Image 1 (tube, rainbow, N blue to C red):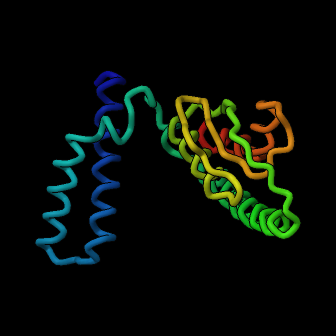
Image 2: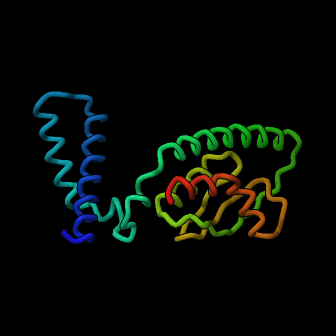
Length: 170
């Protein structure tokens, strides 16, 4: 079997497994009919949508499957960033030191999934909202902009999140 065909089959199985797991979580039923219906439905939908679930240009498991230890470290860093940004936002509101700006910057993360996680992590962090993610270009609304240089502002918004995410999905 060629590598391309192997990757197509792998994407199909991953998609079907995620769909079936989702089915099991939402139905919370272990009745035989429910299990069989979920399996058949997951396989059918997986066969139609595996190319949308995992894009063909993401042709390696490294770009889809995270490194577990790095992912756990990233989640702790994200949690810390959420709390730190919350306190920063609280202080800025009380002292009226808000300077909102729209900033444009690029990310060095190669994986589409990694870029999406970075984009959502920026939005989860209080004081920032990702407006657009297009390939490696992000547009973010940031409440605490203290520079007119897009690259410097981007580095402040991404912080350590980007560096660790690059290690999660190398």
